Length: 225
Image 1 (tube, rainbow, N blue to C red):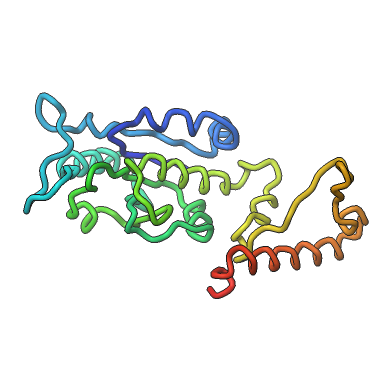
Image 2 (image 1 turned 45 degrees about the horizontal axis):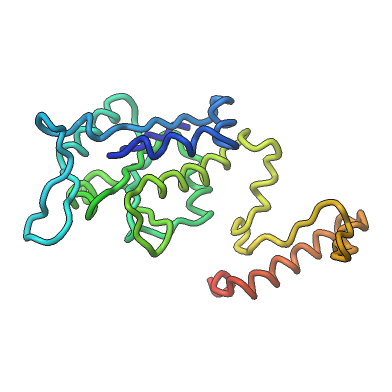
């Protein structure tokens, strides 16, 4: 899988992809992430990428020409399954979207800045608009890193135990149940006896009940959905 990220501040994305599971995905040649500096396509001597908005108002807008030229440059090299714009007013990102995106081959992510991007790019070039929550960040880079992390770990072969991702929160519409490890008794705080029983069927039943209980308590909206 290849992901190209278009950014005004590419240095923000250096660290998130150099450690842990994503680093393992790169080393196994299962995932490529390339960060494209939008200023390389900027206009004039100063490589301008933003301008005042028509109609007046506070805040600058990312210009159409640099973004379009960056997209065309990438699309001359290969075809892309999706062009995603990270924006607060996009579709709320969830596990089901991550699952879907993990199955595609090539993906472009556009990181917004300022007051956003010229809406003509959204109308004619973007195929998906995604939000990671109901709040505003300084730019789309951190949101893009969240998306890449959530999607990258689902690519077959990235995790040492591929069944692990299937047991994550939200995969079955519920939160994950509680987990424990050694010692079984720490300062009188004990691991539930059922987990020490070795009875796989009963353990799975316990986990299902605990997942439902935790979801009902913490995220009842998931049950409504």
